[in-house]
Picture 1 (tube, rainbow, N blue to C red):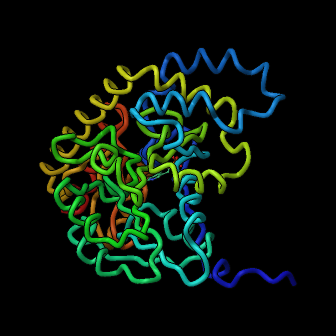
Picture 2: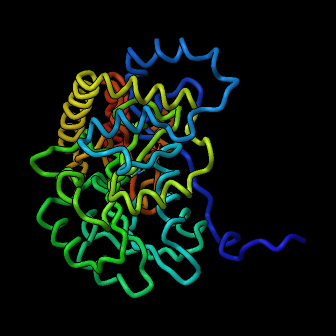
Picture 3: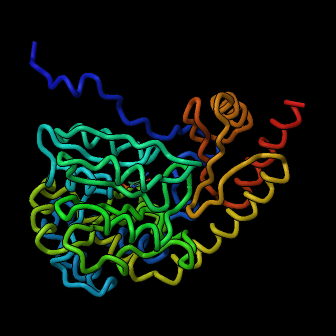
Length: 351
Ligand code: PMP
C-alpha cells in the first residue's frame, strides 16, 4: 500500500456547484452574460497555434495587468485561476507545523489548499455573517504564515470596510502574509469596500488576489493573479505549475482587459439585479445580509438543504451549505425571476 499523507486522508474534497441539464444554474457565482465580445473573436483566431506551449512567463498578460494596476510587471504573479494562485501563496510560506488563518465559513478551497501545502488550517468563526477581524488577529501565533481576508466573503456576501481592514493589517506581525482575496471586487460598492491594492500597494506582506472568472466571464478558461511586493512575487512564481495558464487563457484575459467598459456595465446590471432580488426576498419574509458580491446568502440553517431541493424541483440550482445557509448567484433577470417564484412558493408551502 502506498503511504499517503495522513492529513490528506482526513481532507474533504472540493464540492463544485451542481449542473443539471436544462436547469437554471445559480450555484457557481459565474457571469450569466457569456464571453465578452472581443474575447470570443480573439479565441476563434488562436486555435491554429495550440500545438505549441504557451508563453510560460505570460509576458504580455503581465504587461497588460501591470498597465491596468499602475505597477511594474514584477509585482504580479498569474495562475490557472485565483484558486491556483491561492495554492501558490500557501506553498510559498507553508511547511510542517505552520498555520493559515481565515474566517469560516469562507471560500471552501482555503482549508483544502492549506492542507495540501502541508500547513494547518485555522478556522475562525464568522460573527453575524462577517469575518471577525479581532478574533482572526487573536488567532495569529508564531506558527501563522498566512491570513486570508475574503473581501467580499464567499459565501456570506459581506465585506470588510477600509478602517477595520487597515487596523487589522497594522496589527499583524510583518512576517505574516496577508492575502486579500478580491475575487468579487467588481461587484462591491467602492464607497463601502476598499480596493486593497490602493490601500496596501506599498506593504511587503500584503498581496491582493483577483480573478478573471467572475466579472470578466472567463471561469472556464482559468486565469487569476495576485499583486504584491516583487520580493514575495518572485517566490510565488516559482510555485506555479509550469505552463498552467494556457495560451487561450492568456490571450482571452488580455482581450477581456480591453473590454473594461462592458465589464463595468455588466457588473452594474448584476448589482441592480442583486438589489432587486434582495428587496423581493425581504418582502417575502427572508432575512439576509446586504451583499457586496454577485450572490446572496440566505442563512436558512437546518432548512438549507430542503430549500435547495425545493428550488431544484422548480428548475433552479443553488448552492446549499447544509445546516448553515444557501448561496444564490445573481443571474439574468428571467433566471432571478424563476428563483424568486420558487422562493415565494417555499414560503406559501410553509404557511
Ligand atoms: N476566491 C474566492 C473568494 C472565490 O469565491 C473563488 C471562486 N469561487 C476563487 C477565489 C477562485 O476562483 P478562480 O479559481 O476561478 O479564479
